[in-house]
Amino acid sequence: MIDIKKDIKRHALKNPEEEVCGIVFLNEKLEPTIVTCRNTHPDPSSSFKISLDDLFFVKNKYQILALYHSHPKSPPNPSDCDINNSEENGYPMYIYSLPEDSFFLYRPASDFLRPLENR
Image 1 (cartoon, rainbow, N blue to C red):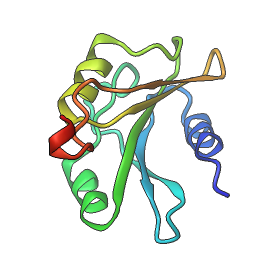
Image 2: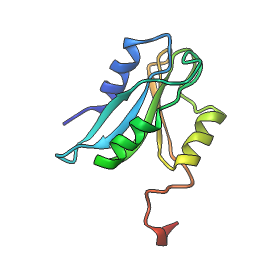
Image 3: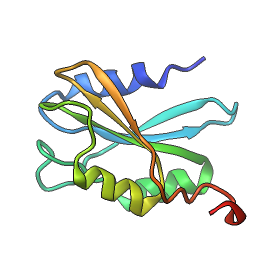
Image 4: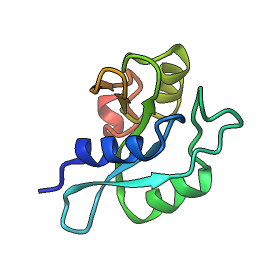
């Protein structure tokens, strides 16, 4: 069994001065897996941006379950920008806090993953 939290934490610890980011998806064995993405935000020490190329590459091959990023200097609580990002794209957001060594999972109200009749 793949432990996505351990993988996200490992990714964050590789670059503790910047927000790291990536995508959680179901692999061919239907196991949750992560793919690390390059943070393309102009100021990666305070924010993150997953490139559309990375997002569409994964989306075209797999079912995306969530996005993730780290908070190198703050608690895992989502910022207003994190909430807006998750609400706009419809994906849940895992946030890992390095100082607190803890996770927060934000679930958007606008869940685009649900069938149309349940929206």
